[in-house]
Length: 97
Length: 384
Ligand code: SF4
Ligand code: SF4
Image 1 (cartoon, rainbow over the protein chains, first blue to last red):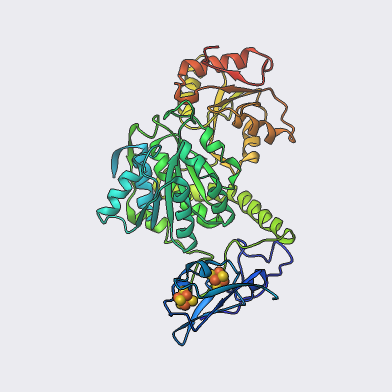
Image 2: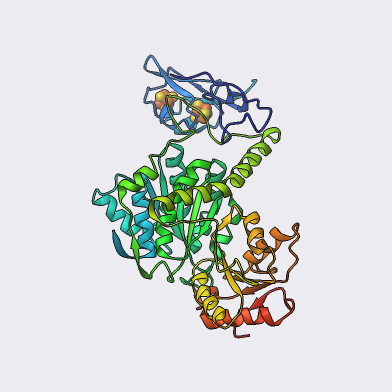
């Protein structure tokens, strides 16, 4: 269903769209590089309630085999999932550590 | 069908005939009966539209932006402080190039708290990138909403229809409500040039770097300039089916006039009476009503004022620290032309104070008597 997006490179007023808009979707825009802190799920303690999936604003959490999974290409490291997890099983680690 | 309508309801009928699909409005003061009647029309099933009640005028315009971006014909109405609260999203609507049409009832700005007319609310939105049309009777109000959609959708720029509070908004006049069939032919369903569509996803309004931001502004300006022509064309097309023609300017006895009064809104209707009276006593005077403020019809104004002796601009607004705003606009548009006549700027009627034929006659007499204006702003009818 999704058309792969492209980075926009326009040269003149004649070739731009009516309003600033992406060509296709934004999947090329890896916002994961904005992240300073990295959420990591401890699957042994996770109860699969999917509250993190509901709260992630990006949304960078998807469900795979009935378990939550973080897509680090898009996770911006906002920490909402860390805050909302009812069993506190998401750790927030500094990137690069 | 002829109906006796207040200006507010003329707007509601105009929106209904335009078959708007989404109406978003804040229902409390300074709102008027515009959306009250529309909500009834929607609830009765006479108009197939979503009526969204929102918590502020800012949200009303935001909802219209969403609706229009999703491909719907969207409408809202507001007034005074409500319009001011919309200011930020007005810019968004126009730069997103969404052909929303809204009605603004010209009410003065508080404090002191007021519900009477003057133009400072809409003129504060002059540079938001919207088209603005100033109307002078309830028939024109209804017709302008319908014409407005056609123009807005052609040039992809939102359009604001402006009318005087109380003098039009709450005053009843006979209004011809055209047949729906006729309007359907004139104004077919909205076909968006771009829209939000899950099948064809795009992100709108994203980060736009300096290397391309300016080009969007340039295109917006080009479309605005194009709109000068489109407003006249669509106005003529509408006239051909209804007998009522609307253009950027509405001149009255200007052709052979030596003196021209420049007016907007309902003051112009009163001025016509004064023109007739003065003509009877031999004064060669005419009245040029400006309907379109944005885009500003400079070339047409030049044509109308060529060869005239003096020009008197009546403003129902004030740009504090300078002058009336239409006065500035007219002067600026003529500066690079060969027209070199005295232009007088009068400010009057603020906060709904009556602008009577006697007052307009006094204005004309001051203009005729004095070689050139003694003050940049001549206040009329103020208890100094
Ligand atoms: S840190 Fe924020 S963006 Fe990343 S997965 Fe958690 S909620 Fe989503
Ligand atoms: S909120 Fe916590 S417990 Fe619930 S699914 Fe997410 S990680 Fe697991």
